[in-house]
Image: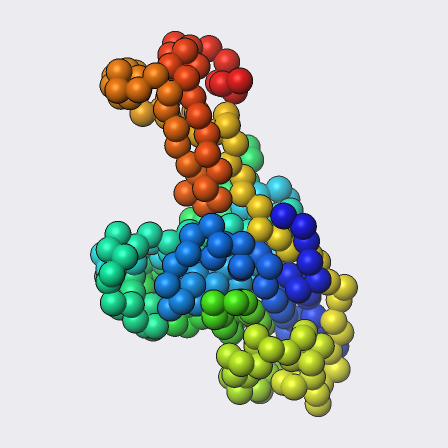
Length: 292
């Protein structure tokens, strides 16, 4: 999927304060997620906020890896999940077992009793995951709660999405350099109060410069160059084949008994993969897992 100027992330810094920010806009990548999984409009908006959140949080990745923002519960949509990699590749998925279920714009009612997690996965390193109960109606409030509980620097997010786009804003306090702790706390309250005035329409309609000017025109803000984002799925023939083999020899034999050709699709991008009986049998016996 080509990268477009409508899908960008930018960092910004308040020149006079120990506070920084991130801002993101997603159009083509959000549209690709919705195209592969044509969810109802209310669910698209919720999933769009997860996409924007993953893009904002992944900006802190210092090495190769993936950030996953996920909500799980027992409601009509038991799973909402979005990923963003250090390469700025995005993908997302939701599960809605009953396609006729009534959907709420309240995240707690949508997902049900459950939790929100942020997972950092890096090759060759132990996976890190933080979990908080799902206690707020909006994802942004849940994430602010997550950062408050994880004892990190004060961090807040503002998210918006509809069936055509997604956007987000993040503010984070920095370690004390220019200010005293009391001064930084006062400025933090001032800037977050300004950000609270941002409407969902403004998030989705305004460009980054205009959005920041609308909020912080009285402050000295340095806006850094944009980084492009895109929809891209990490699925592959080897990975999908390996997941089938991981079901175990007995299950693989049952699958082969019912059909000489096993077809499956990636949940994220709906790419179809076909495997012959010989390919799966060889892989189950420890042959080349690439399953060519």
